[in-house]
Length: 410
Image 1: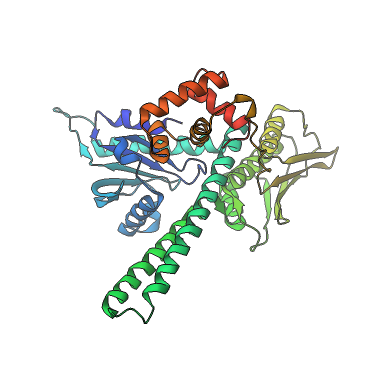
Image 2: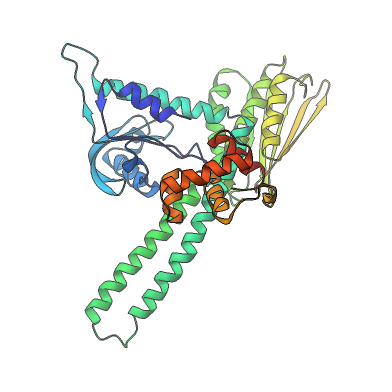
């Protein structure tokens, strides 16, 4: 989704900035959406954005921070301290502009700050809608991206934790004479270790959501319907200590329940709808039941679309219709992605370096990133890519990535 580039273009008559970054936890696969100077946006981290959000929230009460509050000042962004302007949204998404400068029209015109808030509110709401109505393909991609990020983070935590713990053990050794240096180094290493684990926990938070809070967000989504339709929507709470839900499962489950409730409301004579979530450790179990005439059809377009969403996550949906008594819908959503098939690329006859380039390409790396990881030049990367396109029969970078994914490379 190129919403960051579109928003930056729309703001350009009113604001100058070196970079624009959107940070939204609704998109588990792509929590950052960026536009602007590559040297900045390529280095922006989740930890930096989290710190900016904390600063923004601290400037006012939590209610203001969730409804369009703004903060400007100096903060680390892209690895360096820069002037920033940060704006929140009702959906808790965050917008950050680096090196911001408002452009005032020579004659009376709209205030740049008003324009910024107006366009950002529209963009944030559009992101929320896109996620709520995401097609099955987005859910599959989001799950894969979430799982990969969690795996990489876990590997980094293991690697650096071992290094830092070894360093601590050495520096605490009584064999070292310089006690002051040892104390200072110990404090620095301990701080780094805590920081690393904090980043790991934060990344996990982005891709998982406690089942109780996910269900509470569903209640908030359906609150307007409960208030104005006259229908009694009942909620059976999930176990508080149930397994946390992957972000894309939580989003999909809420969207599926909302869709089922709306489909049930369209029937005549529905007075009560009951929705229940439970978790058996491996699956999220969703049940939605109404007391209507029992006319809900699994073949209707509205329900068929929901079945596609369920199947995109390797789940299942059963619709039990009882004429005169209502409909009972049971949904099972696995919490873990299916086992990834082994890569099958032997038929492409790739060289060792070509396979390394293809793996990094499939992981979403750009040419510069591939060159840095393999310690080769960007021109060499382009040379390997041309050979890859020829051997794969691909006409573009996107097609090569799709072929790699379909053959088990991530």
